[in-house]
Image 1: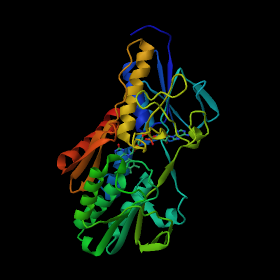
Image 2: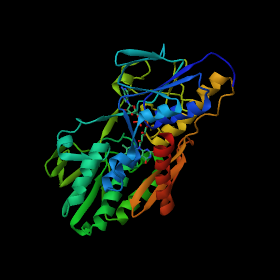
Image 3: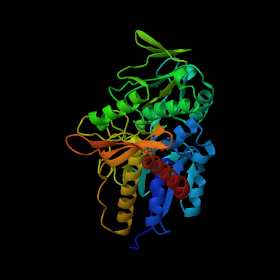
Length: 384
Ligand SMILES: Cc1cc2nc3c(=O)[nH]c(=O)nc-3n(C[C@H](O)[C@H](O)[C@H](O)COP(=O)(O)OP(=O)(O)OC[C@H]3O[C@@H](n4cnc5c(N)ncnc54)[C@H](O)[C@@H]3O)c2cc1C
């Protein structure tokens, strides 16, 4: 390696993007250079497995690891809230302490909005957080009759497949308990079709998966209020003995209030290099808004946060060691849709293709289920 001055790389966020970045940097850089990861919570939790917590296939501790485990690999871990982010000096304020880096990677994710729909947080259940998935699991264990309604609160949320995957897994769980004929399952989406960014063929294929399982689907149904046993959609309402929701998201305030944010609150990083307008500052994952030719953003998904993390870590290590820069992030990725009984579908392709993303949905098969389990194993055992 070239023998330049010792450098510090700050990584803001200890989720998928941050942990992948820190690990990759640590492998690429010699120990003179510091890699410092900052995260609010002491634990990493793997969100893609929350739906397995919902079904009872995973216990919470199986999808949780202390971030301090990264210290064994030579990554400095700082636990605390980033309350200010100054991209001109690459400085984070954490618990009153100022941390400055020669390079800064921002991967602070997206925040859930809990109060957009009156009554929803009180009368609904969500699989989008670990405690929420645990509470929902307890409800699903006992339901014998009635109607379950899965809703998306807004067209923009994390992981476009997750609510559809949730409905299919709920259906599978009811079948395995022998009560499916007594419990109706419906999905009402705020978006115009399932996973619209993946194109009409994938949307139609997901609708077919739902229809084949007797799950009633209606799109463009914006929930406006929740009451005990009822979901309101403007002037109409539906019975919902169990109301399950995917919340809307907003940019974390520390980003929205910083010079990094565009008018919409998100970071509009370069779609290939993930560079921002500030020297040495990169942004990856859910806190970015990467526009696609079809006028929709790149979906918020761990697979993209991970792919972007590798590009940014390699770019920074190439800058430090004087090696050529790697090629940029290519917009390729895929996402598993668990359908129950040990099977999953897999939607994958090139999200940067012109004029529209070129994405295909592979039929449910055991190998896609094992693909998701293998990714979980890689994250939980090899990253942490
Ligand atoms: C139920 C569910 C299922 C999903 N399934 C899949 C899937 O199958 N495949 C897939 O690709 N994606 C999936 N996703 C999406 C995936 O989890 C996210 O896209 C991914 O985690 C984004 O990574 P990130 O690093 O950008 O953000 P995150 O992983 O959210 O990490 C952000 C981190 O920043 C921390 N943070 C935020 N603000 C601050 C602050 N001010 N100070 C300090 N720390 C802060 C947070 O605590 C968090 O640890 C799923 C998401 C959900 C909710």
